[in-house]
Structure formats: structure tokens, C-alpha cells
Length: 155
Length: 147
Image 1 (cartoon, one colour):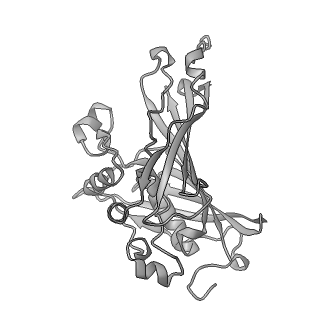
Image 2 (tube, rainbow over the protein chains, first blue to last red; image 1 turned 180 degrees about the horizontal axis):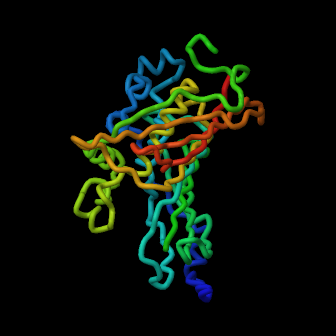
Image 3 (cartoon, rainbow over the protein chains, first blue to last red; image 1 turned 135 degrees about the horizontal axis):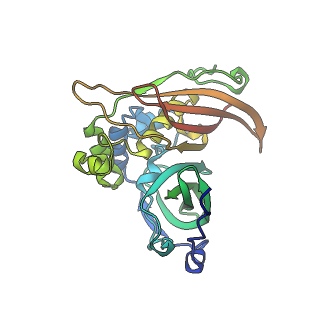
């Protein structure tokens, strides 16, 4: 059995965990939502037609459930772990959204990001470093509307 | 079932299957999605870049596949306002449909848990995204609140 890889996460990398970016502000713009719906083939008119949204009992056109990936820009750069230059490729292994408050076209949301977890382990692919990035979108009242988590695996 | 055709909590049971959703993503789809999200990573539209990375073709964006999972569950549940959680794992790559090589991305969903919490009637749906060859590339999970 080969010797286990020694840790590649440095103290400087660990210091990045939990540090939140500045908020990046995004207007939920009707044209951007329409282009997103066209791209993913989402043909429910409630996302693009305010009358259809009203008929469905909504006060405005709702944000499509995964449109948040188009609003994923915080207000300052999220510093990434350098791992002393270790690793050759990084994969997006999975993402998760938690929906806490509805958001509609015309609102402005504030996106912040932070590294929520940084771990390393031995996997089938060998030594891997798993980084969990948490994104939070707040509405104008400051309440969290949606929380997102992205798990990146570096090998 | 409610008047709008959406399921009610009392009608839902563990093992209940959602209607299958079949999508077809072309290279045009991938370019549109890149433009819509502002993510211009070349592996999603530049075949040479994909081949240099050892891939057979350009690949579908993970978030595009997640949008398909979302569509399947939201269509069934009766609207995006019902959705409480949605996750997707990107376990395998999917290539786009091409002339002479049609490919589909199929989403199947099954109710895997029902419970009440915080005054809401919640339903967990286990989602599976399959490539054109029937390979499970994109498992996921959703939680919806039903009346």
C-alpha cells in the first residue's frame, strides 16, 4: 500500500475558511430571466409573463429555481486555497440550493460567498481536497432568500 | 389532486413516480446557457478544448442539468414556490445532441419521504438524470411543500 499523502492544506489555506466576501448586488432583470428560460427550455409562462404569474396567484414573475447560478457573483473576490500548487484538476461534484424566501423579477439581491469547509482525504482517485463554497443571497430586507452550496473536488 | 392538477400532500406516497421529463440539449443550448449565466468555460462549447481535456465532445453544464432536475420536480409540484431544497451531484459527463447522433437527458423522480415539519407538509423526491445511453450521470434530491 502506498504511503498516505501528507497534508497539502496549508495554514494560509485554513485561514480562508469562514471569511465572507463583500456583497455583490444583482437586479433580477426580466430580460435575463427570459434568456435563462429560453436556454433551459423552461416554457412555463409564469417566469416571463407577469399576467400569467398573477393568474397563478403570484405577485410577480418568480425567479426560476436554478437562476441563482446566474447571480453567483459576490462583491469581492473569494480567495481560493492555493494548496501549495498541489493538484491538477478541479471538479464541481455537486450543488445544493435551500429556498427560504421567494424572490421575484424586479428585486435586487445581495450575494456573498465564503468557504464553508476545507477537507482532504484518500479517495478512489487518490488524495483529494474537498472545498465547500457557500453562497448566500439576501433580499432588500436583509433576510436570506436562498442559500447555495457548491462542492469542489481537487485531485 | 388540486383543481390546478398539482398533487396534494394527502395524495402523495413513498414510491410514487413523477412524470418523466425528457430534454434535448444541443451545442446551441450550451452556448445559450453560457450566455445566460455568464460562465464561458470552454469545455461547454469548444470541441477542441474538450478533446484536449480528454473528453469525447463538449459537455453539458452541471447547472444546466440541475435546471432540468428542477423543471421535472417543479412541473409536478405545481410551481417554483413549492420548492424548499434542490441538490444535484455531477457524477458523469453528458454530451449534447448532434445531427446523426441524437442524445437526450431524461429526468425521473420518485417520492422517497413524506413528513411534517415547521407547519409545512414536506415531500422529498429522489431525482435521477440519465444520459442518452441510460447512464445515471446526475442524481439529485428535492424537497417540496405541498398543500
